Length: 295
Image (cartoon, rainbow, N blue to C red; front, side):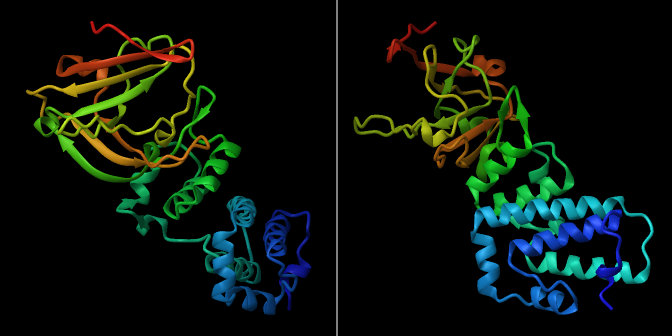
């Protein structure tokens, strides 16, 4: 017996089944009885790969899966046939890559638990975000955050995991002494070095100029506008042992390419200003960068 045919479509369970049926319709599966479940669970690998690569298709399915999961959370009492029906549907979702043991998933040495500590979202949003981030589907991830206003602050939707693709290394205390970094700043307090993020300056010898990462490769939230500041600074000796710089590669975000090396300091630069030597300050004025006097 096809249990789903005897479910009131206006009931909570009916809405859950409808969410599932709509999702299967997205991938062209119309036979939703027993044979339909068997067929979907055994989709050819090529079809599963297509679902992984087709961004729009996956986003549509992800939304349907969210609706399905939210509906199940509202259900209270189910008989055996109804429970079996939902179990079969969950097996299909799992075969499509939407149900995982996320607590055991690791991408690029980053665990699910560490990933979700970096922003606030629902359980289902965490899972979708971790999957997209782990599979490096940056355009889909950005769109997902924008549409759901995840990690939004002051009208800006910030990337998960502090904008990092992975943690390359961590340097502490005196390991940082003598190293040079730079950053861009905007806003009313931009005339003073602050914030926690910067990029390493690949300073070289033999008279060759310093190598700096481009603005777009840093995937910053603001374009270069009038009053933007650029700081180049060096860490002094005698640094506190608990000071940490976490090195990472910036992910594409704000429709910018990313890929620059970035560092995240455990302390705001304004709070460790006594340990920092400002080397260069530029200000963008009237379409040009102008050198500022060092204070």
